[in-house]
Length: 110
Image 1: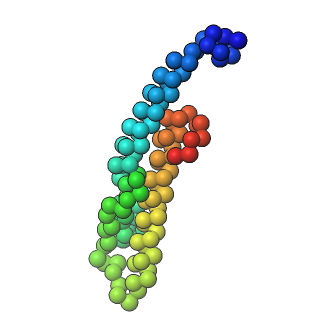
Image 2 (image 1 turned 90 degrees about the vertical axis):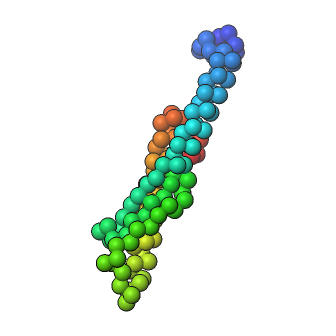
């Protein structure tokens, strides 16, 4: 067995702990940056636009006045839901991809 009790290498426990602490700091910084990042998506050909943060907070809803039809509010509501859900999906996808790069695919569940 190699020095430090780890088979196959010269990395000791102190070096391993330093790397783990560095990765933890990098992950915290990345999570903070991603939480504040904004993601926008639209529905209905751009009639409705939703903006969310990486922390999954709805920031804005923009509705083109030309698409507002009091006779068909259900369609407007559906477009709002679709835009918000797509923006949230984009945020999730980006957060997972960025955290995956940082953790090297260790499956830490972000």
